[in-house]
Image (cartoon, rainbow, N blue to C red; front, top):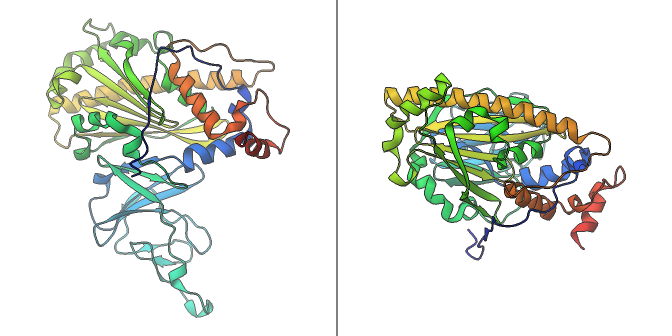
Length: 399
């Protein structure tokens, strides 16, 4: 960790500036630039250390067109590698499981030790002079943050702990390092740019209209939160005491008492939401935590991955509460899917120019400033000529 790095807390009582221009959400060449800036050069969540407890256990994840896996070696250490064979680029592992002592490519059988070193090449007499020590799997940066495994494909700089700073106290309060996977959810594909989905995650302005269920359940107070120049922010929601007129939501309100003892008094009856720009949402509840992760598939297509973790010993009441929570939030995700796809359609409309951001959308303002910092060509009002976006970005970076 670089001890010299100290991210600043950002003010919320500002007048938000102009949002990103529509072309940055639709242009294929721009997509290539922000894919590298936000998905290869920033930390990506893979899973939890408790997903791979035994030697040979692995967990693979796509980041977009790139794929990584984490695996526990014979020495007990966890390492992360690019999920690509050094021979002919085949993906090696899928999903999760155990490698039973070695990592073997399913195409030609090149075999690697659990530490990534190349162990054997079938019919190696046809590879005269090949030095196996030069063809190990490419290792990528890995950080264990309260049991959460993050990888970074390219670059260097601050670690995950530095990005969260003092906000990490919440991970300790909830005991996240002891959590285990407690539910699985199918991935969804949304027909929108990943930034549309992330803009949506960052603001609560749309809740009263877009999420009537959340509006019945929660008190939204935008003063209870914080944003950091690291691209991490959080907000706190309080459960309403007035019973919802929806049966499922009312059951959640009634049963939430069964999980409150899991957390300190100061965060009881509260939901805490973290955003780690630009693609990881972390939603803390007393009974569970969910991770909302965006995986870019193209300029107008995004995979939404949801992971659920919780204490390993839930009571029957807590388990029921978890099930209700997931059902309630599945509704929210479906509502957001519709909202975000409508925005993507509108962004492609001829002559559209973005309206002003409100004081309730400061999180979007800071995210858009981060985009302009990491991909300077985003400062332009209109797209450069076809084939010139990368060159224009290089020119903008030196201004």
